[in-house]
Length: 433
View 1 (cartoon, rainbow, N blue to C red):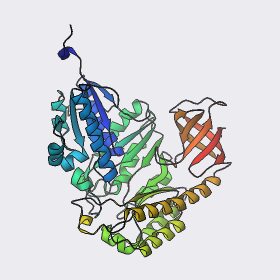
View 2: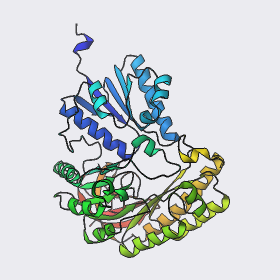
View 3: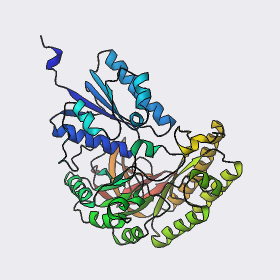
View 4: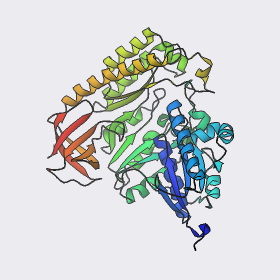
């Protein structure tokens, strides 16, 4: 009879939240693999590590529900151990220990060596860029900095991720080379704030120099920029974007709001006038650029007038890509001292109105794509379609290009040249040229 102790442990890493968490899970899995541990991502395993998100209410709720689900499995004997890491655990460890004591151990965002030790593994300092990627093989997230020094009133990220810390250029390049060697063709650069990159290490905003190093990496065809901040944007990046074909004409720049009273209360360090001028400069420098932004509605004190200013501005600016969130009242943030005075249904109604406007803008812009020939990367096959993206689209959040799989064969991860034949508000249809 085999005893339980002879069973080989299989570690299942479950990832919740944003691309930075995806990256952290991949680093953890790379470390475990280097320690000869059997590790899987969101499959069956007798040891479970949950990488949580603690950003806004919905995310926290999902994280807590996932922890409870695995604790239940542990009680029923389906899994042996449950460990929790990530942002929720960093932010609420004492509460979680008290409320859900059946978790074996809780770890914060900076406690990777401790988590590895609990899993019977050593933290290997010599590993740079050894990650087990969980994204489709053609793209990977590349985190160039951790933490944030911005004082935004609504945001709990500095509480969970600490101060801004840039990763040295040479380390990022080594990681990019390893990803390219594994077949990655698109790097999605992420940080809490890309625009701050390098200030701590090089005493200047150094994103442009980093990009000039990354474009030299063989095998990488697209480099995409995520999460820039509107104040102090390093304008030399625009020249690099224009000159270097590998840098996607794409920028994700969360602007959050535009009414001056709200921007001031949010502690964004900018105004409507400055932001509008910045976007105009982007468009003049790189006319091809697709700008993605994110907005928050229902922030404390947001009046109907503030909302109308925002709405009108969204109509005027005609962003190619836009997402809208309802404000979440987060304890220990500066805005938590304000009264959360916009009712939830009003928040939701405002978000719907913004997305309604955006849907129309997106539809009109997509109609202009009909007849155009574009380069797309094929991410996956879904039913009778191959699903791809242009350089103007990021995975999971942006438009997709659908190509009839009954008429043509394409390989996932490869690039194809297509002609757009039809367009909806968030989807394009195409045939191979």
